Length: 186
Image (tube, rainbow, N blue to C red; front, side, top):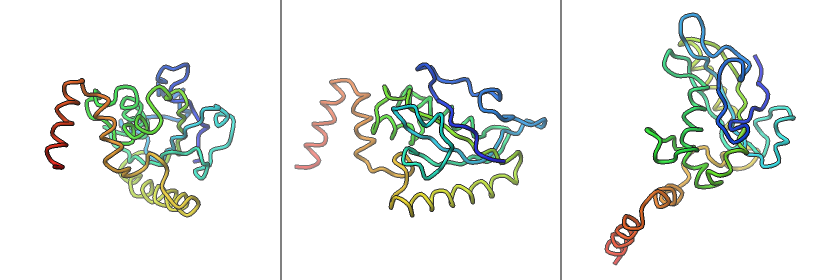
């Protein structure tokens, strides 16, 4: 197996249909298992990344992830959850932390600059350990290269999430929060 090409997550400002034709591999096998493996998200306002080879050490990579293979979840499901959170924020049923970080750091309006590349590793229970091992290696190499994890990978600190919660609040809710904070700090 090898990396797919970079694919826009929101081509023409609409979320892609992450079917087997779009991603370039079988999303499910005959037993109903979803494809497991590693994946990268990249942010590139120029769009040039779509014509370039996939490299996890590319400075435009903002997330390195993995998904095991089960009948319930796989790599494409993770991208759907991430992109749903990017679109809806806290209105998403179970918002993904990395999607919230993207919204806070880059803004939901910049979703059209998001790309994904997949490294399909197969189907079934055996994929989980090898996929997590590969993710660990990719993250380690990225951290060695840049001295940090990708921007939306891992814990970003409470101020990032507080900003997103504040954006979702009404003026009255925000006023109540400010009063609460002032009371707690004085």
